[in-house]
Image 1 (cartoon, rainbow, N blue to C red):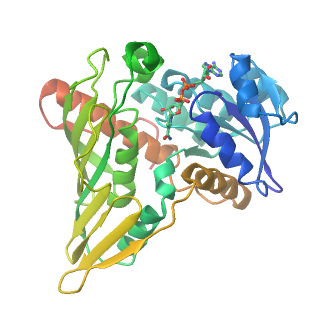
Image 2 (cartoon, helix red, strand yellow):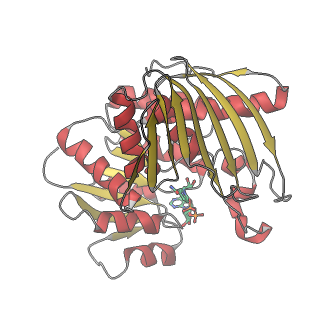
Length: 339
Ligand SMILES: NC(=O)c1ccc[n+]([C@@H]2O[C@H](COP(=O)([O-])OP(=O)(O)OC[C@H]3O[C@@H](n4cnc5c(N)ncnc54)[C@H](O)[C@@H]3O)[C@@H](O)[C@H]2O)c1
């Protein structure tokens, strides 16, 4: 691809505002060309006073008419797979909010259409663009810790949802589950990025501590084993904030360890003094949009494509199975060859 990436946004709700800010911060690589949402006022709010952005009420019409290179999917979870397949069938690249999709069957359709059409499907895993995460990955790749044994990630906050304000997120049919497949996706893709292997088995305990009106869990503890020997531990919740001092991510390896609250990172090699660095906050979704556009313009692979998105979904589906059966659950591989 040459020039700039013409993007059409699908879904103009809450998170779409951060994506639009991401386009605006990347004028050298991105053209915000169109937006589709059946609720006209939402699309108008996201477009602002930029008349060059064409509004559609149906994303299929936008895909057919707006001369796009890519779409950016910010829809409720049950609508992701259909939109990904529609865009890919039209030859458009895809940036998709988490979760990539909700079921193994949807994952198989996505892997099949990606292989057949050759389009790039990037998962919008925004926390990968935090400077502390990039630094942790760099230290791991340099061998600072030797073989990694354990990775822990946390994403918990006190969510003030009510039955009225929660909308599609309260129902398993539209959300795909509860908190774990929503906010829980973040600490799971972060875990996967730092662990660096393919997940093989999962043990989980899910709870509904406070948001009783949800169909699914409001909190989850998940243990994941990877094929490279790493064991990961995720804590995630909408019921409560993590205790003061809880790390956003940490790891322990044969030669040392690392911990980060997301802004500051401290690591220590055994026998040496700890090293602490503080990083400037970034607009992580703007960094994600830039990474997507540059991947398309240079033909390079994004950090997380549908391949990693499907692995994270596999962990979540195994966590639901483990909680149901009260046993360790295997991560089922999908039929299409994505690794
Ligand atoms: N990365 C993050 O931190 C983060 C934060 C919040 C949400 N999200 C994700 O973003 C996605 C959207 O969440 P949200 O909070 O913005 O939801 P939302 O309910 O605020 O917005 C969804 C939008 O989709 C629109 N929509 C519904 N059906 C449509 C269709 N067929 N075509 C076009 N538009 C349609 C709705 O009118 C609404 O404007 C979800 O996948 C969610 O998990 C990510």
